[in-house]
Amino acid sequence: MTRRILIVSGKGGVGKTTLVANLAYALAELGQKVVALDANPSTPNLGLHFGFHLAPRTLHNALRGEAEVEDIAYWHPFGFYVVPGSLSLEDIKNANPEKLSEITLSLLGKADFVLMDCAAGLGKETISAIEACDEIILLTNPDLPSVVDALRVLKVAEGMGKKSLGVVVNRIKNARYELKPSEIESIIGLPIIAQIPEDKKVAESIALKRPLLDYSSSSPASLEIKKLAHFLVGQKFEYKRKSLLGKILSFFK
Ligand code: ADP
Ligand code: MG
Image 1: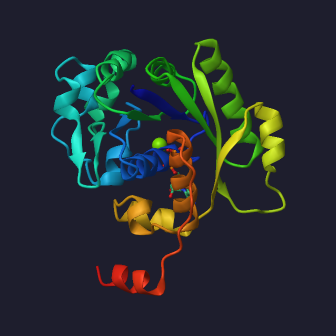
Image 2: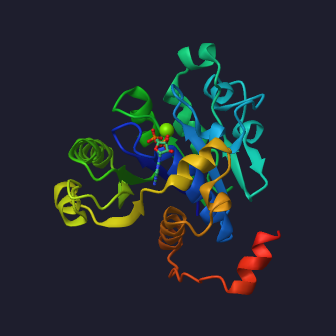
C-alpha cells in the first residue's frame, strides 16, 4: 500500500523541506520504496537539497500535462526517487497545482511512501497539496505563531477528510521562552510524534546539498528523524552507538 504523506506547517521556514529530504533518506534506509515529491510549485526547493535543481524535466512539466511522473522522478544514489520542481520563473509563474492529485494518484502501487513537501500558507497550492495526500504530518517550531498556523492547517485538512499522524516539533533549543511539548499538544490537540532539536549540522548539510542523515548520521536531529521513520513503519528505534573501531572505520570510508 502506498502512503501519500504531506509535511505541512502553515508557517514558512519551520523545516518542512529539510524534513521531507531527510525522512526520505531514513525511510529508504529502512528498506522502504520512497518518492520525495516537491508539492510546492511556487517556491520549489526540495531539488536543491539533493543537487537536482537542474533537472531537465520537473513537476512543472507534469502540472502542464507534458510529462508523466515516471519522466520526472530522479533516482537518488541514496536509494529513493526525487520529483523536483523547476526553478524557472516562467514555470513557477504559470504553475497550476490542480494536477497534483492526479500526479500522486499515479504513484499508487509504485512506492511505499510518497513524501510530499508543501508551500507555506493556505493558498491554492497548499489546498491542492492537501487534496493530493492521504495523511498529514503537522510540522511546527516551539513558538506560538507557528503552532497557531499549524492548528489552522490541521482544521482545513481535517475538513477535507485527511488523517493526521501527529505533530513534529522542529528546532527545539530548550530555551525558557519556548512552548513546552505539553502546551503544543494541548493547543493543537494531537500527540507529538517527534521532537527535533536545533542542530547546526542542518545548515551545513543543506549547503553541501547532502541529506543531513548522510552528512552527520548520528547528530541529534538525524537521530530524531530516524526515530520518526521507525515510527512510520511501526518499528522500535534503538540507537546503536558506534564502537571505537566502527568510528575509526567510518572515518576512513
Ligand atoms: P520550510 O521548508 O518549512 O520553509 P526549510 O526546511 O527550508 O523550511 O528550513 C528553513 C531553515 O531552517 C533552513 O535554513 C534550515 O537550515 C533550518 N533548519 C531546519 N531544521 C533545522 C534544525 N533542526 N536545526 C537547525 N536548523 C534547521
Ligand atoms: Mg520549503
